[in-house]
Image 1: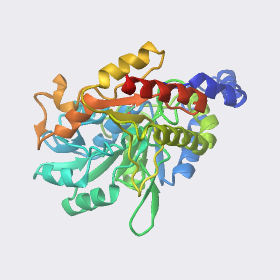
Image 2: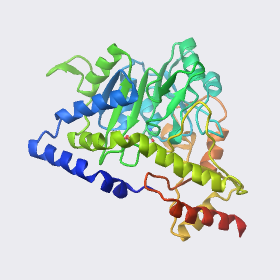
Image 3: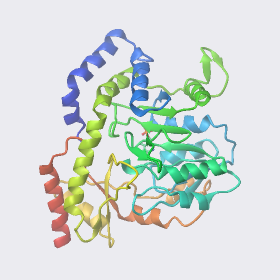
Image 4: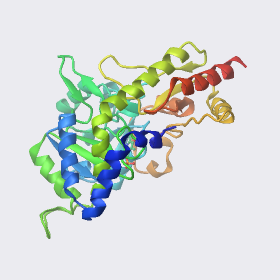
Length: 371
Ligand SMILES: *Cc1c(COP(=O)(O)O)cnc(C)c1O
């Protein structure tokens, strides 16, 4: 599904030198490279503040902790996402309210969010799934009208650009109250272990987020709030600094591979290729087909028999996860989330994918539907 080693070979000198430097100086925790990477990410994304942390799930948890929500407060989250988006809501004793997504973009819509509002609604977590922004302008409008915080789950879409109707462009993760991302190795900007970051333009929130990520302390051994221990390792910061200058080219390589799939697969009967919104770029964390007529699992098996990996993200929508059974408030029908869980199939996509490799995958899919 991904080729991290091929990508590493192209940046090997910077990565190896950087890691060796960390070992030589033994600055494993909070080395100067961590701060430097935070600065570089700030410049890259246009966020006013970047707080690095241990992983993307922590980023979401710390974001929610900083908003002083009370048990029973409701947080709206799409039913079709990775569990982390909603897990942190439950962990903090808040109530996840699952809403349905759009069948074409896989993303949560302002319309569905509106239907889920209640007097207890306090925050929305839009997830920019598979690399494309949610339609953020109407979502931000609903948030403003109803006094809701917006925490963007940008784990899959770092580098995507959203264009507002007045022409303003913003990177995903820098639009809401707080943005969160993950540097898990297979993410679009991945390190060689775990890592994450939090974005905000709000000075006060930034200070609080930084404090919560660091045991609730601003001055060492003086703890003003309950926090956690969530740090980006220096070694991971070094890897990320080697990769960040290539992120634009990585996104372009993914987009090129996606366009090639779509060009060759869009007319194959029995599948639906992913749709691109006019107001968001797509950084294709995943290239996800919808396979019609209940043939998804058979196609996956067929591809596996030809040595082609394909993955189901995600086989169960949140409303079907046992962990959420007793804590969620179902606001509406979650039919699209269920339909997608039953029909999606993601093909290999990464920065090193060649047209020759894609031709084999495309031909195998065509053969499957011919036979
Ligand atoms: C990967 C991911 C996360 C969590 O990131 P980790 O770094 O693995 O904790 C959260 N949300 C989404 C949508 C993700 O894809």
